[in-house]
Length: 128
Image 1 (spheres, rainbow, N blue to C red):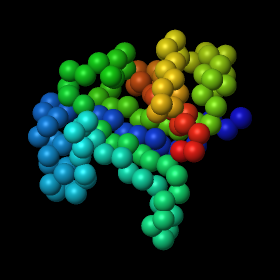
Image 2: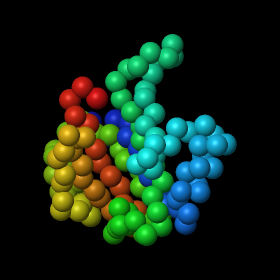
Image 3: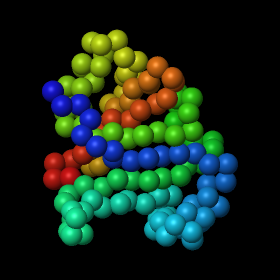
Image 4: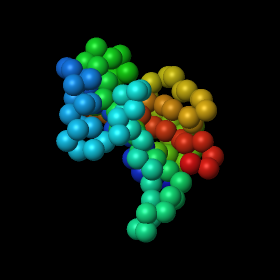
């Protein structure tokens, strides 16, 4: 079974999220949207879309999105079969959070790594 197929997103906390978002927008040209991040569409070497995105987002320092993880960031990994991977991770003794979300954006589950970092697993919707 293939496990991780790519990076779906990078999420991190900031003491002053609006100011940090503005800095990235002004100095690095990231098109920060009202939801606090940007979606980078995947392209081939010629710049043509290939069907995927990587999300980049800054959350406020008080966000509970990162709980129960101890880090100020989360990496979202793309996977092909979320339910199968969650099952295998549990069998391997990993600290898998019980909640699995299924929405129009895909399926999500979380595991805590040995350093206490919350890791997000994402199975994109068909076609992404």
